Image (cartoon, rainbow, N blue to C red; front, side):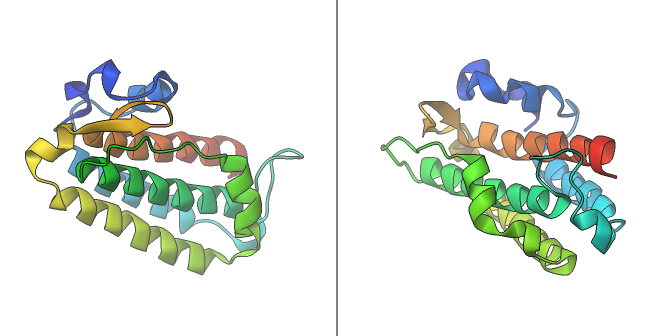
Length: 172
């Protein structure tokens, strides 16, 4: 399954920017792994000083960005699981700024963040590997809009790519 198989009614318009940045010729499984490798390559070059860096006042530091990526991936895993299992109740949105503030991620060390990221991404890969092909097209309500299991997978990748670009351009 490739991102080109998605239809615009499978996700909220807000996520279109993430979807647009995804390579059209790679399968979701390949994208999960490549995306993981790309972010780990960046993380392995970060110093302790860079981990606390903010490119402007009020912006997250690098550690907070990493914690945000971990938290958001967990939330989207949960959403995908709920829809895959036939959840009929709408899945709520969340305030990412509030999550970052309450995570104390900015106080964590890099080794712990890398370890947690690997665990969460490997969990995402396993979750998506567990879904039967028809399940990927199941739809539910996420943040007030329709969402498919497969679209959520691509959103996870696109979200990571979005922040990877910001890390490279503004932080490192």
